[in-house]
Image 1 (cartoon, one colour):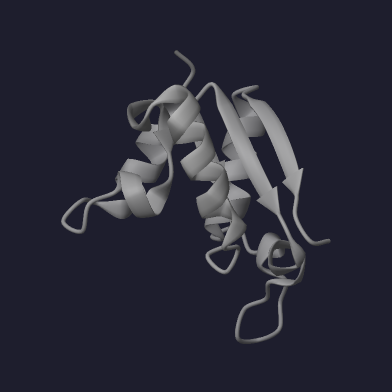
Image 2 (cartoon, rainbow, N blue to C red; image 1 turned 45 degrees about the vertical axis):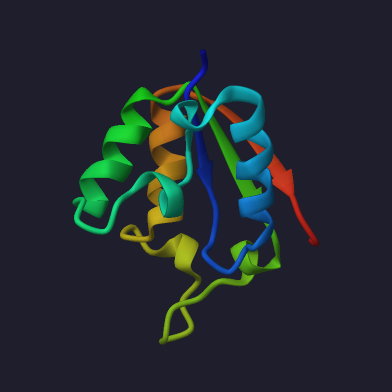
Length: 106
């Protein structure tokens, strides 16, 4: 069964709908969605990294929030090397994981 990682900006509410659909098709244990897959006491960074290391496919939810996201100084978050969405995408590209961009409201 494929391991699927859903990458999204926290304001992208459509990501939950994608997660629910994929969970129904592939099972909860095969779909990583941070809000459901990481428990409160877990090391968030470690869990994200671990999930990225075993994923077969990354679903990249792209919406206006994804494209226009900026930090408090106005810098585009995608230009920040510490931005987790950027890191998730870079990890997928480096490991040659299948990436499925899903455009939402752009």
